[in-house]
Length: 217
Picture (spheres, one colour):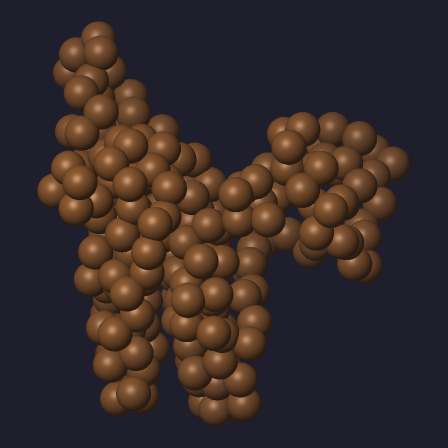
């Protein structure tokens, strides 16, 4: 038994079948006795589609409205996963960034988390629910608006929640089999690494590896 924050990225929640696979994983962990907070990204490609829509609407989209638009992606995946789990008799609740108590500064499209008020998530965990949280987003009291954390921000959401909630683990779950020394799609000789230090991961993220958002490391 453990208290775990699990994060699933866009390719892992790309359609309903993949969301059902995520539900299988989460349901099994819950049945094993783990307390779970599950953080989801938007479906793969959806954020890009929303950006394209915005630029089709106008040449220079307003950043406040961009955050309203882009934050909608995660608000699709979280209730879908909750619906799947509830249909199986598993107690689950979907929560937006604001409902999860994630408060940021007022910098639209690249906000930084200032504080996480964990009371609401803890309330649902106390009722034996799985809390399913929208990654990538928060709420700024400064500008009274939804904010987003920048590309890859779901990683940061998951790590920040794990710290705030004092979880034992933060697991970044993906549909590939590990971290490689280079992108195996580009470098044929890339080697899968059994373990990696924070310093090494930070260096890889800083030079463009898409494994983790640099802030999350």
